[in-house]
Image (cartoon, rainbow, N blue to C red; front, side):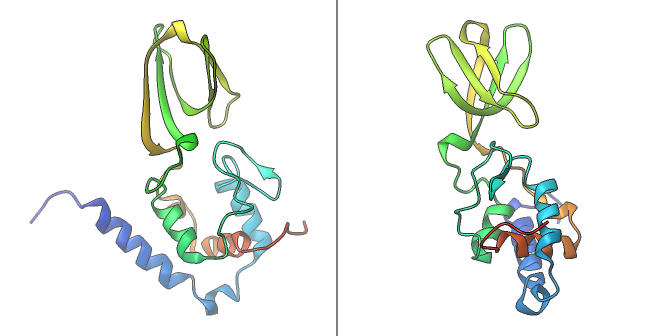
Length: 167
């Protein structure tokens, strides 16, 4: 039988793969300092940890990072439970520009969006043609897919730390 593969099947396969990869034996060879570099490259543009990184996503310093199940669930399926402050908003202006980001400020006249890799976008409300709030996270799925197994282990080691790593 041919047809689309349900997202659940893909997520289940990825979950099984990484659950098998990250184990006590493998973590003994992980390097949290290398994981810091992986974090800054992969997660840091959007997430802050120990005062370093971006502000598009939540600060991970106080999250439940020691729990691998929690980490894995949030990385593999970031759309399961998205707080309103981190939901993607799509705005199209009357002159055809499109913005996607998180709403960080709003007045009667202006909307301010936090946009990945750019300064905040301040849009005059009278210029907005359409505005759609989604239930989707700004965080893309498949973040581990671009990493080697060793980079995943190093990243998990860094995420499980309890304080900043010496450079």
